[in-house]
Amino acid sequence: MSNSSASAPGGAKVSDLQEEGVVATLGDSDTSMHAGSRSARHSDPHSERHPIVQLRDVVKIYGEGSTRVVALDKINLDIYKGQFTSIMGPSGSGKSTLLHALAGLDAVTEGQINVAGKMITGLKDKALTHFRRDNIGFVFQSFNLVPTLDAKANIELPSRLAGHKVDPHWMNQVVRALQLDNRLTHKPHELSGGQQQRVAVARALVTLPAVLVADEPTGNLDSASSEEVLSLLRQAVDNLGQTVIMVTHDSDAAAIADRTLIVKDGSIVADLANPTVESIMEVTR
Ligand code: ADP
Image 1 (cartoon, protein in one colour):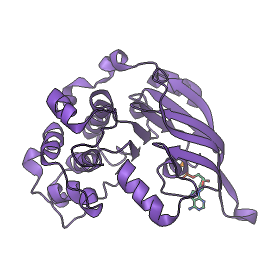
Image 2 (image 1 turned 90 degrees about the vertical axis):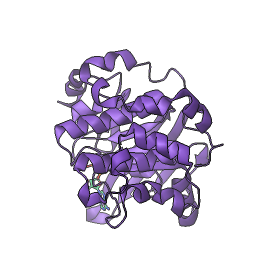
Image 3 (image 1 turned 90 degrees about the horizontal axis):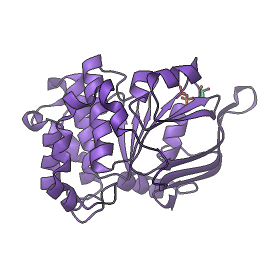
Image 4 (image 1 turned 45 degrees about the vertical axis):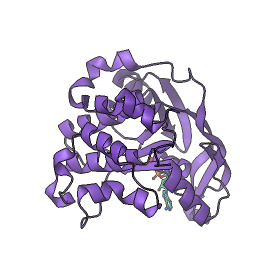
């Protein structure tokens, strides 16, 4: 997926993206994604109708007998290409289980999950690892950078592990856009939390994943860094056609998405188009 002829998430080729300078636009992020500017970019979340993730009757049960927990209770869900979807809900409602299931990190008990045209339920471990490597970009709360590697090596690591060459031009574009140019030789401990998370976002974006999943990506960040990281994810959707799915417990963060799913007791209890903090609060209170 990471060579220069690969399709970007929005269907464009890397070379097209480079010509259009779309990644460079990402660099404007830190000023442009504040709450007041959100309404302009909201769209009908189902307008394009290209589901890139489909869940059918998905059930996930942990444990048995007295420890049995139904973490996902017959979930049916389509997530559309080129959209930013946020997932909210109380602690223990099943958000992470849902995200991990659709990213191929955890097997489910029943049902089918199709991602980027591939049925991932039923895949064996090795096939699932390949699927994740080639299709999913991950951003976690805990950054998960390798402490002994500098920022550049961290960004390139997943591609190298997959045996793909990182397109240097694309790498430069992403690095510039995320304003990491002067940080590439720094090890994680020499970077702030916000910078480390930007490295993690760059690491996810350089592989041109079909879907970028983010699990509480701002959970360890101060509010300024949170806003910056959210704005980068937002612009990856707007400018690159990236599909982003983010779990968060923060309604401000959730409202940056095109669509917010509210999960409770393993079910999706609300599905909000063009969410606002107010509309989210209304259904979660
Ligand atoms: P959330 O992300 O919304 O906090 P989770 O998806 O982590 O919720 O968990 C959903 C439910 O599944 C909870 O009741 C949780 O205790 C349970 N659960 C999650 N992971 C495991 C596990 N590995 N073993 C047993 N139960 C689990």
